[in-house]
Image (cartoon, rainbow, N blue to C red; front, side, top):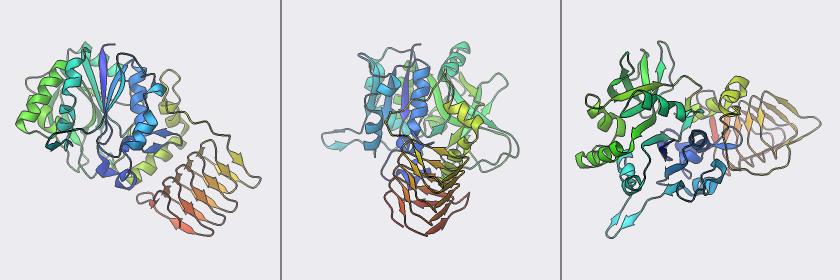
Length: 375
């Protein structure tokens, strides 16, 4: 398959500042043992896309540490493979892109030196097992210049909108996109852009140059929107499980969604399209004699002596005897002491809750324990 990939690792971090102050959104831990970027990289690997560029603009230390050379996704190649593009500077100028088009401008030489016919572009804050090969086939079958993946939200859909409104599409009966605009906070039927595109490489190069020349900022609402009449821009309607990290509440909600076996199977249980990640060997989880675990995802290396219900626990979490954890997400190496009670909590790595503390949030306003916090 003659396609290459581009992944944005910092997009929409404004929606989740609580977890992205010192890490890229692409490296935010998810579902007990994964990082968000795992789903996009795995989708590309499963589509036989073996040349991928990751644009990392800030807070990329943990991201680079996680993906390494791309071995987990079979992207260690002699002539292609995984390349991470970090900010660069020149004499008298510091280069730090402020928008998607400027970030793509940094890849112009990389794109010109490539030979692939098409480019698959994706954000990394997407929670889904996307079949990129099916989108590419749809793109080629329809003779498209650009194909954009979108979701259709029917009347009455309660969409947890981000701090920045999503882009909306008008799609004709034949599937052609006739209008791209910034969204509005309304419940009428709408088509929401997923920020997943397939585009011809030569066309992408010319569009990037046009966008830079005209001072455009948004790749979709400014640049592509100006060409809906003269380019064949098709819409691919995505209908599988899908989530976006529009807030800390959405992060909690989407983690807990995988307590439903159907969702877990669809995204992480497809043997034909597995989600790969950097492997860490940990001992099995230890369950104490008086422990109680109900409807939860527990990673390896945990010690559970208390009660855990409807929660997701990452590697190395310890819940002491007498502690109660409900409706929460606890990241690696968190410790919950005896007598503590947690409900609707998101605990970052290494958080500690001392004896008999009672902490509660709400489904739409979870309480955050920052990294290495001690309460």
